[in-house]
Image 1 (cartoon, rainbow, N blue to C red):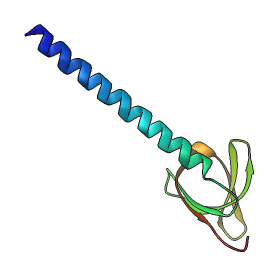
Image 2 (cartoon, helix red, strand yellow; image 1 turned 90 degrees about the horizontal axis):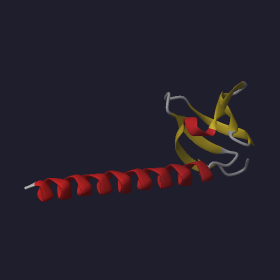
Image 3 (cartoon, helix red, strand yellow; image 1 turned 120 degrees about the horizontal axis):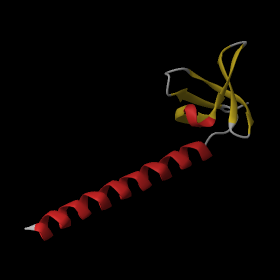
Image 4 (cartoon, rainbow, N blue to C red; image 1 turned 60 degrees about the vertical axis):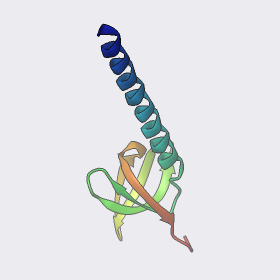
Length: 85
């Protein structure tokens, strides 16, 4: 009886570890895809276009003339970079 419980616990731990690893790889891939001109949405729901990248910091233009400085980790999703920028 105890062995079954330990087996189930071990399986749950392995499942959680693999899901965490997958989520981390997806987040790294998302951050690597950020380039100037990309349209992004932040976790707060703010949408805008990346105008400059400085290490882990981004300059996000939300509307013409309005720029925000944010960290890369605040990005929730990325669209393809716009052509012509």
